[in-house]
Image (tube, rainbow, N blue to C red):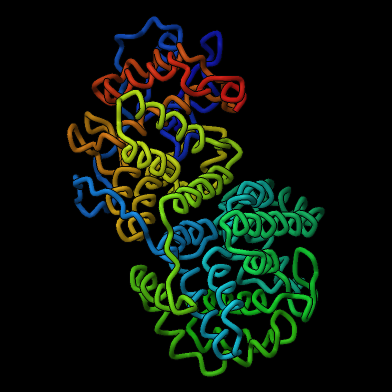
Length: 530
């Protein structure tokens, strides 16, 4: 959460007088602001009775479908694995600058091509999961893309997929278009000069990081070396001029060759229609793509147009039906929790200022739930919700997440939307509708000053109240670029000012109890150095 916190000695931080809440613990604080003097006094424990003003500039909420309350429904014991990966793929799509459903459409295209090529069941399974998770490494290079181009990482990534990098002039035009857009001509010239000097080497390193991390995630999820190798080789080209390893021809796994073509067809079909997409890959046959795989796509116009017209739930169902084999793979609680842990790391990797936030917050939230005397099932629900609470942060560009100064009103609105996207992503897992609502409500406040629905009082779920105190404490007690980590006493002093009006008093007492009981390493050297 973004918050203004004075540096030692009462000096104001460089972010300015208003620092909105963060999208994942990368900034300190909660949905409130005050003067630097008041916060400094609170940190010294002398302003316990002084209320913080609410930072809620507008009551015009985003499209939350007017849902202000959901009854708690426990998640089912088992869920379709394809549902889980389909839902999570939406977050990856948005991180890559693609519309929600990009990976699902790619999966359907890839399976159609695999059937036409007569690939055996084992390879079609590898292709199925590789397509769903092809962008799992996308957050690992987001900050690097922002640093290299100086603009919205999502726009740069989305545009990159439409550029023929073997054409020098097109590549140069792309670099110029993405270099610090909106900045002064001097800044843009400086950025373009830097790109000319290190652009190719830096780009290869970023692709390597993304592909390598994506392959590691696929392996972590237990989906096998075939799927992992396909993700690792996603940006290789038939003529050997791809990245990161420069593989050529049959050196590239057949699953990767099919997947590379499928994602390109999806991108261009969504922008210019199926006929345009098929024409483009035909022109790149023998350079980017295996000519045999390109030939398998002949006459694909009708299904391509149909897949491009489907909504997210229709795509989810179509992908579930397309799963290779006679039976769908199911995921039990332990498998879902393992996936949640992996994707928590994916979220936190997007910005250097959010490292391990989700894991730390989960530890805190689980300890709070134990202090409240919650049962095994409720604690398990807290753990899962905490791990996934910031999925929507993947939709926030690094121009905002890594910004050293205060956010503008429009940037603040983008930041606020991350909780909405968390819910929208998670609710695509059938049976997770309640978990999606409660997990996404971690920025709601009892007095209605939170976001993105402005829930009030009893409409704020108990689970969300637990997540809120854990989220605030972690943000305050970890180091940020503009201030050191606050001590436990300083963090709790600030939180006490919001007791009962914003934060739940029972949840806050449970947090204090957990910290005092030492039932988890909640404030050790690791936290202070985070």
